[in-house]
Image (spheres, rainbow, N blue to C red):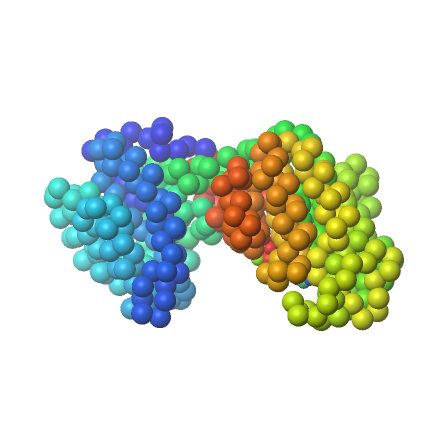
Length: 395
Ligand code: ADP
Ligand code: MG
C-alpha cells in the first residue's frame, strides 16, 4: 500500500479525505472529538513536508441535500482550536462548486495551510461516485490522501473517485488499520485464535467462513453460541436462537472439522428467566438448561477454558462480546476473555463497535495491539473482502 511516507509533498496541495463523522448533541456541539484528534499525526506530517491541506469529509446522512444541521463548520472550528491555526471553511453547498474553486485559489495564494470543504454528502454525486464531481474535487489539489478508514468500504467520489485524477496515498490511520486487520492476519503468528460472539450468526457468516480458513481456534460465545448448541441437539430453553440458521450452523461445524480448525462451543452458560439484570442469575451445564431459561453469558468453565487458549495464542482477534456485557451480571465471560487478551504477549486485535466498547468498559484499551475504528469497514476487511478505498492505494 502506498502511504504518505512515499509521497513527495513539498509545495503541493493535498486533498485529504478524513472520517470526521463525529457525534453531536442537539445544539450542534461535538460530544466526542476522538475522530478529529486521531487525524492530527497525519495532518502534522503533511504540513511538515511543506504542503497545504484541503480536507473533505462527510457528517451524518443528509441524503444528497444541503442541511444546516449536518454542516461541517463546527468540525472546522474544533480542528482550528486543536491545530492552533486558522482553518478556512468553504461554506459551499455544492461542495466543489464555483465558490470553492475561488476559495481554493485564494487559499493557495495565501499563507494559510488548512482549508475544509462542506459535507461531501450534501450532493448526490458523492455516494453515486460521479466522475464529474470527483474530477472537480481532484482539481482543487495535486495529491489525494485517504485516511478515512471507516469510509474505505464505500466507493464514493471522495473516497475512491478522486484517485482517477490525482495520485493517491494512505494516511497513518488507514495504514495502521490495514497493517493489523489485513497484513497481520494474512500471515498470522500461530496459534491464531478468534473470539467470536455477538447476537447473530447471520451477522457473522462471512466472517466465520473466511476466518475458518485462516485461524487455528475459533471460540464461539454470545447469543449465537445457542444457535450452534441447538444445531447439534442441545435444548437451550428460551435463549435467542435463529431457527433458520440451524442447518447452516451445523454445516459450519462440519466444515471446520474437515479443514482442521478447532471450533469451540460453550460447555456451560449463565442465564436467567428474563433478559434482565434484576432476575436471579444461575449457571448451567449445556445439557441441563431449563426450559424457561435464556443464556446471557458463557459459563465459568467455558470462560476459563477460553482464557487458557487465548493465553497460549500468538495472534488473537476479538469480534463480538461473548455475553450481554452491558448488564453487570452477564459481563463476566466477556471480562475473562478480554483480560486474557490484555495479558497475552502476542498481537491482539479488536474489531467491532461493541467489542471495543467492552474493552473500554474494562479499562483495558491500552493493553491491546490494535482497536479498529472501522465498524463496517473492519468487518468487511476481516471477511477478506477487498475494500475499494484500500484498492486505490494498492495499484
Ligand atoms: P460488535 O459490535 O463488536 O461486532 P455485535 O454487534 O456482533 O458486536 O454484538 C454485540 C451484542 O451482542 C451486544 O450488545 C451484546 O449484548 C449482545 N450479546 C452477546 N451475548 C448475548 C446473549 N447471550 N444474548 C443476547 N445478546 C447477546
Ligand atoms: Mg455491534
